Amino acid sequence: MKQTIYIDLDGVIVDIEKYIKETYKPEYIKEHGIGTLIDNHVDIFNLSKPMPGAIAAFRQLAQKYEVYILSTAPWDNPASWTAKRLWVEKHLGSEAYKRLILSHNKGLLRGDYLIDDRIANGVQEFEGTHIHFGSEGTPDWDSVMQLFEVIEE
Image (cartoon, rainbow, N blue to C red; front, side, top):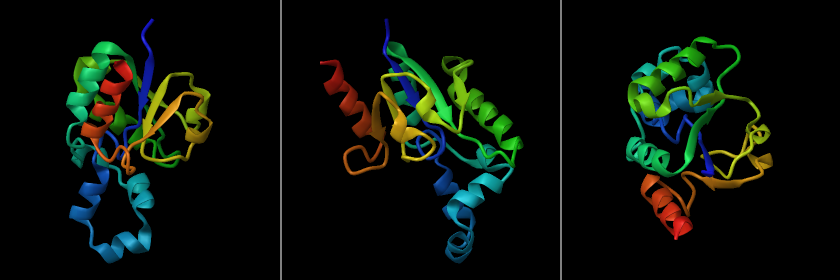
């Protein structure tokens, strides 16, 4: 039986912060906060590109593991739920077909690995291994894939 990997969407697969930093002035970002801008921007997913290496990494991991996308979505912006689904279809295609899970408590899911850039929304209760994307040990997709090469040996 294949091991299960959950991968967060915002800031792990989708480079939303890059879009925000290229679109808004630093003062505006500081005043409103990146999280608020992400939650309230209706088209942010339509306008954001993948993180460098994310698509190739997803596809490579999907060959050896059960891979799911596990993301939260703002309750007060239901259009973002649809936008996430459409972004996944556009950029990940058939490998991600019906593999998008939206939950505000990631600790409820069972699996072996969770690749996430945050420790909120139940990440700290996840019973498998949390790979903290963007941290010192795993700052990017190259480092995450190197980690999985070590795990597979």
